[in-house]
Length: 312
Image (cartoon, rainbow, N blue to C red; front, side):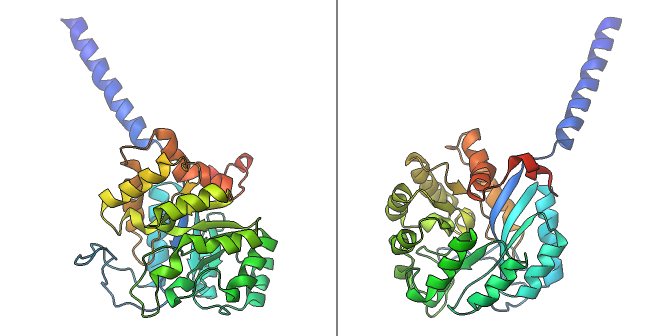
């Protein structure tokens, strides 16, 4: 009887210690390839997160205050061990604040909504000064301007010359803006760009949704082209996201899909985006690690010897 009591005590002690160790384990590192410092236009406090298709209603209220937005984003990054993030902004001053707050964790970039704004020379100066390490999001589709428009050529030339990662909005959905055109987001329109700039490190947000066949064709033909998953992890029904992502995985593109939350003024959506990948029943553990981390390391030309997974 005495031995049984001792055995039970040891089992309980082991279980408690195991639970404590498991609780203290840091999550595996994540690289978020798509964040924003805010929106191009002010939104009222309490504005709910985006959703599609209508009728629908968002479930997270916007964080309007810039300081609170940055603070909340960093807290969530710490919680989920997001060691690096590509962050795009509309205001250089605010972009600088994010970089100053976490110099080793943010790859900073300027959102391009209208060709010519910001000026290419100004971008060149900011890049040379070390203030910007990426380009985009190039979101000119929101203004009805396709990626192969000649007015964007100076940006692509600068990015290729500086070997910058470039994020572009080239897909069938976007914000409800008067000039937005779904047709201007067909990924096939990237072909002219990639032929002219074969060394350009370009990745497409939302993996070109819903242009599945076009996106597969472009990624087959142009191995330098990558994709991130961004808002489709949380803005469309989960079942539809899984159908789309699984098609790309089955097409053999699992090594060129990267994680991105596309949080704008709803940093809580980062958690939902992570959950969407973690719970995908068709993804293997290795495929999840590739999407969360390994593919971005490859795309960004990061050196693992620098121990980027611990840069927090």
